Amino acid sequence: MKQTKQVLGLPVMGMKEGVTQGIAVDFVVDSEAKKVRYVILKNEIGYGFRVLAVEDIAGIGTDYIMTSSVANVKKLFDSPELLQEMESALYGSDLLGAKVLSVVGYVLPNVKELVFDEKTGEIDSLVLANGKDYLSSVIATLARDVVFLDIMEQPDPDFYFEPEVEVVEAPKAVEVVAEPVVEQKIEVAPAKPELSAYAMAQREFLLGHTVVLDIIDKHGKVVIAQGTVVTDEVIEYAEKMDVSADLALNVD
Image (cartoon, rainbow, N blue to C red; front, side, top):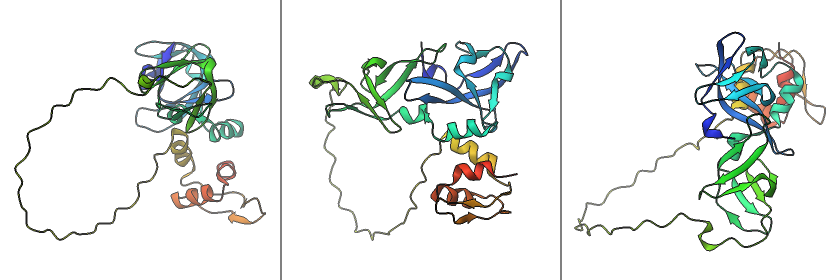
């Protein structure tokens, strides 16, 4: 069994060629089967996203993820089928830190770790933020931002927290009267949400390409015209209009 922290950051080594092909940065999880299906890889400089299916992993050590050949590592955009699967997939980065609820409505500590069988990809257990672990048999649902556990009883009071650390009260500071300060209002732009490995790879793939067919929304309206050069603004507009997959499949 492996925890995600034991796998992320490891390079993939092809035994046939004796060369490496990418570094593990994320996982693709089958929420229905409760299995890790792929390991997502990037190259040493952060580009060239690829995937390695779990069934093609020969073993995972402390230094390398081993596979029989680097030919098992596939480009993320090798096929429309793979692209569609990646777009709707549940990622390991979504699960780590996800909220946890019991099926009877109790809020539990967030997910800290995912433990899985590196040979089959089957999830063995989840480790929560307070160190408690739960076997996959009690996982009712794995969703993008929340996990439901089939726990009917009310958790013990000490379930939620680590033992309290004694706090020593600091000496009281001498009160200092300061001159009034005129407040200056500074507007800060809201931070953009961190992109998943898939989203980063999709942007890398699309930027600079040209749209070869009109992209049409669900109402039959052309939202991105043929001949458009893909920029960050075009990608964001495609996401807003829910045509990201069509855009990815219709560029040169």
